[in-house]
Amino acid sequence: METLPLAAPAHDMSIYGLFMQAGWIVKAVMIGLLAASIWSWAIIIDKSMAYARMRRQLARFEENFWSGQSLEELYRTLADRKVSGMGALFVAAMREWKKSFERGARSPISLQSRIDRAMDVALGREMERLENRLGFLASVGSVAVYVGLFGTVIGIMTSFQAIAGSESTNLAVVAPGIAEALLATAIGLVAAIPALVAYNKLINDAGKIGARMEAFADEFSAILSRQIDERAAQGQRQAAE
Image 1 (cartoon, rainbow, N blue to C red):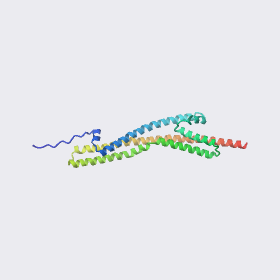
Image 2: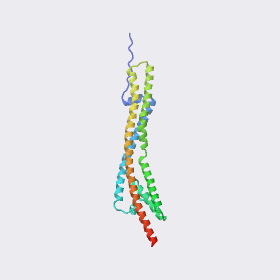
Image 3: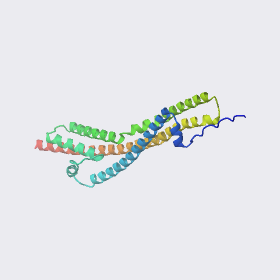
Image 4: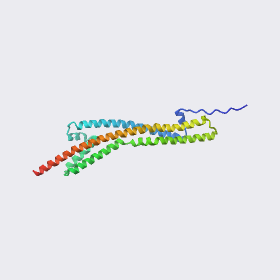
């Protein structure tokens, strides 16, 4: 009696099944990519909300600043608070202004230079805070695809080893291993594409916020420069009298 060949074992071709049937290296690649994707989305959501809050804070500060309120009064309101954005630049400049006059600053040029440096330092800190963790998105966007390809290569190598072991080129033997391998590339793309798109948008938004704060710093520096000149001229008149 002729013996019929055994049927190839059935394989679960669902995403979960392909993941469970993959080798440990491919599984590690998939898990790493999924973790990177989840963390990327957490950063994207957090930064989007933070930038929205920052834009609202800038709008409120500009409204208060240009409302006609005196600089001293506005400074007293903000000095003891945890401020960010334009408020941080304003407080840094006013703090340097007040310290310099309390110590009897005599050179308007050096005072203006110190105020500008204080605002530059505050602006740098604000930009660092805005751009914090965006580098992770850039890394995921540029590396995740290649990590997925690494998993694919390992998976295909495992498939070829299975073909050699079974001495059969039957599609039922080849297909599951190749599908498992390609799943790693698919997960890499799922992680990389949103991270790269979000990075480009968020870095552009951060640049716009930074440009808005820098414009305020220039305007406020000009206002303080005029007041410094007025005080210097007043001091000269009093000395002449």
